[in-house]
Image 1 (cartoon, rainbow, N blue to C red):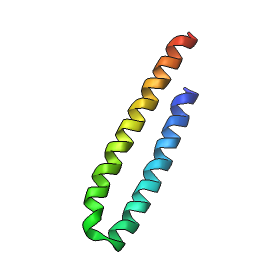
Image 2: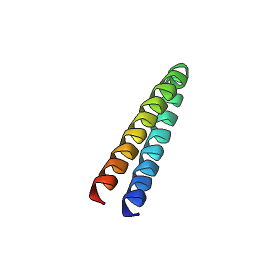
Image 3: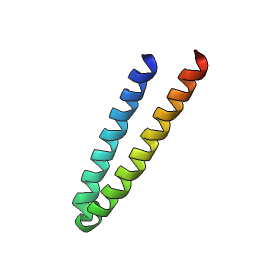
Image 4: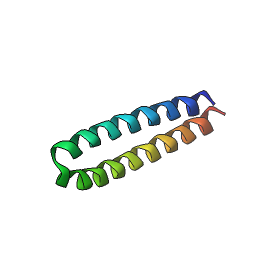
Length: 63
């Protein structure tokens, strides 16, 4: 359960940083923001999937 809470906390921080940086990019370069948002969301999804998979594997081996 602690792993899940820590993971959720990390997700919230990453999400907040991503949102703020995208907002800044949108103000500076409006035409780049859409492309950048697609790339960042894809990378973010892959990272979260890898982390969740790793936690599941670790959890299975610890039992």
